[in-house]
Figure 1: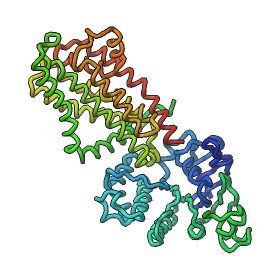
Figure 2 (figure 1 turned 90 degrees about the vertical axis):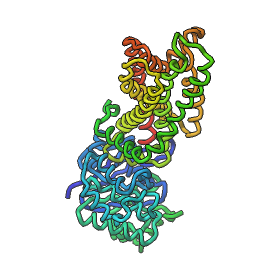
Figure 3 (figure 1 turned 90 degrees about the horizontal axis):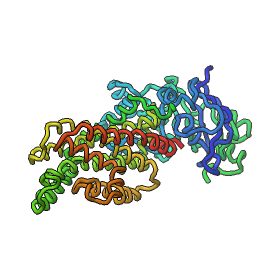
Figure 4 (figure 1 turned 180 degrees about the horizontal axis):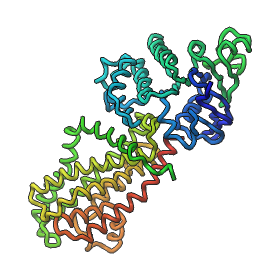
Amino acid sequence: MSVAVEARGLSKRYGQIVAADSIDFTVREGECFGFLGPNGAGKTTTMKMIYGLAAMEHGELRVLGLDARTQRREVKSRIGVVPQEENLDRELTVRENLEMQALYHGIRDEERVDELLELALLSTRAGDRPQALSGGMKRRLLIARALVNSPRLVVLDEPTTGLDPQARLAVWDLLDRMKREGVTLILTTHYMEEAQRICDRLVIMDGGRIVAEGSPPELLERFEQESLEDVFLEITGRSLRE
Amino acid sequence: MNDYVPSLHGALAVWQRDLRVFSKVWKGALLPQFVDPLFYLVAMGFGLGTYLATIQGIPYREFIAPGLVASSVMWAASFETTWNVYFKMEESRLYDAVLSTPVEVQDLVSGEVAWAATRALVYGTSFLGIVTIFGLVKSPWALCMPVFLALGGACFAMLGMTFTSLTPRMELYSYYYTLFITPLFLFSGIFYPLDKLPDWATVVAWFTPLYHLVEISRSLILHPDAWTVLGNALWIAVLTGVLFGIPVNRMRRRLVA
């Protein structure tokens, strides 16, 4: 199986804070790969290094065979990004948000926009401003926006944080669809049940380091625990949600 | 080096986004910024001007009209690249989204400056139209004005972008306006010629961009002189080009930490 993302010795500091401390990981094409850990573990920084919004200090990072350090434009044109914080264009409508995204990518494809509005269940809200949408709808629009350029790899930073259970199910449904279509997914979460449900493999991060790696069943077996929550507690001695 | 060369397509996309937003709000947005120089023209030109004879042989209202055209460009480009850009950079975080696409920081800066120059061009040209209706345009060379209004707009846009890329807080814009933009408005030879002032005042004025734009504007509208126009235009173009690296470098540090 070919490799979608490969990181070797990836490091990044913000002043005194070590956000990523020489981390290594390999994401295979077509899998759903999770980064699990508490706030401040370095998950978001790692995601940002993949999609070019954080400059890496040391190490090697290859995304879809490209050098993430020197080929940022090329990397960004091939991947989709769902950020943790909503950053939709508040001065444009839902539809225009998708059209502008296409323009930033140098694509013009009205059919794709219609298709994505439908996929995100937002066809009836196409003319509204993002501010008028519920939290779940905004998140679905962010996901639809990330798919405008038909990426083979989508990076999602906490795609379900802050959503009610129903909205979370809708997001999971979107993720399942992407997976079925063979899209590689990299996501961060601090919900153990989410990681267990949708990730093929995952790493557990803490304090900028990767402290464990494997598929959810492997990890449960290796640490002889009932849930990933307990695995985390076992490794770090701390609860995930403190 | 690669980090400073903009892609035309990326810059154009940023420009198109702003154009689309402006196309929704232009009716409401155009009027207030229009009325502003108009009030100055009426109050100073037709009010104060009634009590003054002439300046350099030119009736007072004719003397100030070209400067007010130039200043309308300064104000428009400044508003666009200060609060509007800051909002997109720090509040709505729109730039995070844009930079997650193939668009890079240098495209963003180029596109925003181009847009602010476009907007300034719209305001400046519209005000030039009003000045023409008042019968204050004396030379057909005024038809060349849009080119220089766009250039001046780009210069003030670049200055605004530079300050925006450096300012840690939105409140500091009051310093930018009070200590930079407003003094330029008052001391760049719009309301009185600088040749009777002490030498140092003329020297200071020479280092400010609005002075050069006022010179171009007054020349094209009243008494065209190719060297005045081209020399001052060169000054403005050089400043605009020289500044470019600062907002690109600073905004990259802010947005791609």
